[in-house]
Amino acid sequence: MTRHELKEQLQHDPLTDNVELAVDYVTTHRQVVLRWVIIGLAVLVIAALGAWYFQHEKAVRQQALRNALDIVEAQVTPQPNSFAKTFPTQQAKDQASMKALADVASRYSGSDEGRAAQYYLASFQADNGKYSEAENNFKQVADSRSSYSSLGKVALAQLYAGEGKVGEAKTILDGLIQHPTPLVSKEQAQLLLANLLKDSNPGQAKQLAESLKTPQQRPQIQRAIDQTVQGLK
Image (cartoon, rainbow, N blue to C red):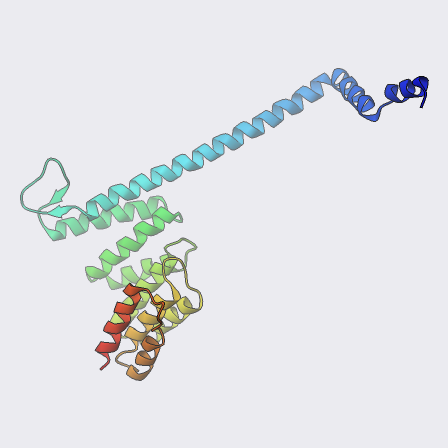
C-alpha cells in the first residue's frame, strides 16, 4: 500500500467518520441532546430517590415492629421501673401488647413487618380465648406471600387441632410437607403431623415419626422424634 493509499484510507476511517458524524449531530441538535441528557439524569435521580424511600420505609416499619415487641417482652411487676417498660398485671400487658401489634398490623398491612405483627397478635388472641379472631388473623398470615406464611399455617393447624378439627389441621400440615419453607422444614411438618395423629391414628403417627430417624438427623429433630415415639408407647 502506497503512502497516498494509506492517507486516503486514514481520511475515510469508519471510526473517524462516525465520530465526526456524532460531533456534527451534537452541534446541530444541541438542544435535543441536552434535553435527553437532562431526562436521563432525572431518571437516575428518581431511581435513587425511590430506592432510598423504600429503604427508609422499611426501616420505619421495622422500628414500629420492634417498639411493639418491646411491649410484648416487658416485665410484669407491681414496682414501676424508670429504665424499662413494665406492667402491673399480665392482663394489662396482654391488652397493651395486642393493641400495639394490631396498630402495626393495620398500619403496615401486606408488608413482612405487618404480617409478623399480625402473627404475634393472633397468638395473643388465642392465648386469651379469642379463637375466632385468632383464626382470622392466622388465616390471613397463612394465605399471604410473606416469609411468615408457613408459621401462620403451623399456628392455624395447631389451633384447629385444639378445636378437634383434625382433618383441617392435617390438610395444612400435608401442604407444608409437600411445600416446605426455610422457616418450616419438611421434617418439622412431618413431626407436627405425627403429634397430631397420636390420638386418632397412633400407628401411622409412630410410623411417620420413626421414618424420620436417620444417622444424619439433626440433634434437635432427633430429640423431638424420641419424645414423640415415647409418647406413643
